[in-house]
Length: 226
Image 1 (tube, rainbow, N blue to C red):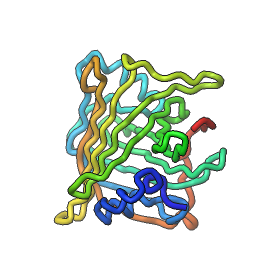
Image 2 (cartoon, helix red, strand yellow):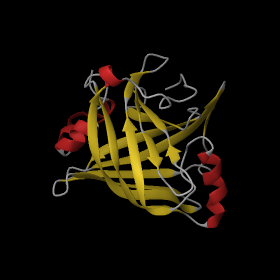
Image 3 (cartoon, rainbow, N blue to C red):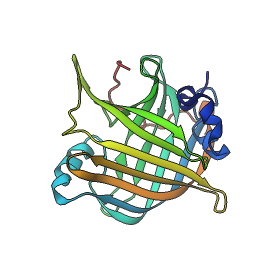
Image 4 (cartoon, rainbow, N blue to C red):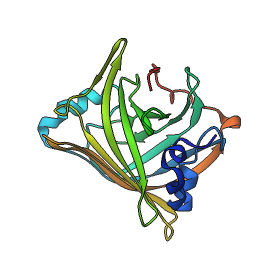
């Protein structure tokens, strides 16, 4: 078994910087979890009229309706087998903002049907987003989002463009500082920029068999459809 990202990227995965290859090899096969700790230089959101949208998402740990600079940041990537037998990796981001921490939760699985990484957003996996990762010439990783679906009980519908968002994530490794750099930008094609952050962090790897999955990382509800 290879990692979720290697399965989707194929031979292009080997074009990533070696440190990115290790970070995105986190999975049941590697037996490693990765915890990144650093600082977001900037967390931003769009005009005032997008704040209700961000606040609604924040109720399920989707997006962050706050702004800030030099914000302490943690990302926890831990692999586990979900209730449906799928290899899953957590992407739980915690921003230590004034007034209390804010989380942006995601869990990722491989979707062989659409040959992509399927990103379940939030605490209840109601939103599913196709992710398409590619290796850039400089060895960095570029991830662009595709289709979004809302899933609850028998409901499985594509999110209309008016309500959806396009995400772009760029992650690289700086050899000079020994830090990962990340930049995230989420936009709506009608309303413009919604939310984003950029900063850097270092990574620590631990053995999943020894440490397991920290309480509170797994979603409250798991969605069977991939």
